[in-house]
Length: 215
Image (cartoon, rainbow, N blue to C red; front, side):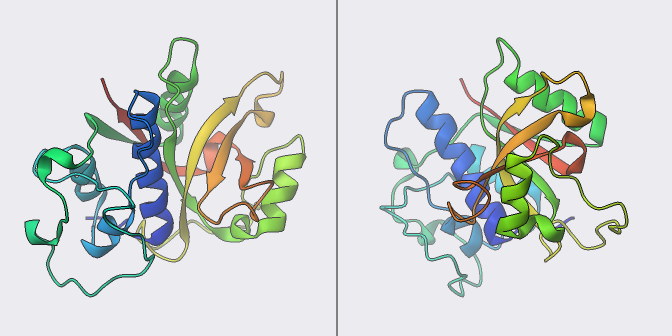
């Protein structure tokens, strides 16, 4: 299976689930990405299990602090939780979309009038977009970020060093030129990245998009 685990993915995924729960009335829910790191999640389905499986679930950052590094837990088990199953947080489902057309349709459906407008996790190649200044320029320019023409395809697994996860928080398709349509994204790098932690990316730059479902 394709590996996805990395700190940016863990942060974006936990942020997505936290926001979905808060949007549905569970105030003050801020979930810890540390569980995904400690459990050595190896693929998308494993991460989805933590968000949806009644035997698993996320804990709050208060109950399960976020250290940002693995804690040498050789095999994750129920004993590694600090709260009961009843006290953990879950959502109903998370679906993964691949292929540019499928990804764009899923994003647009989520943010369309009548859509849930949930934040989505988008996985893309790192390239120079990880640079805070590159992200800042993309945020301020009319044209969203796109990979340079000579950028080679990503060769590694989804969790390798040439991949990065962001949170897709909105879209803009108001321009007549579809090349100027974009997704607004939030990075796990914090407010020093882009403009106050946000930038914008063309729809076609994502390799995978994860869409949450709840309620």
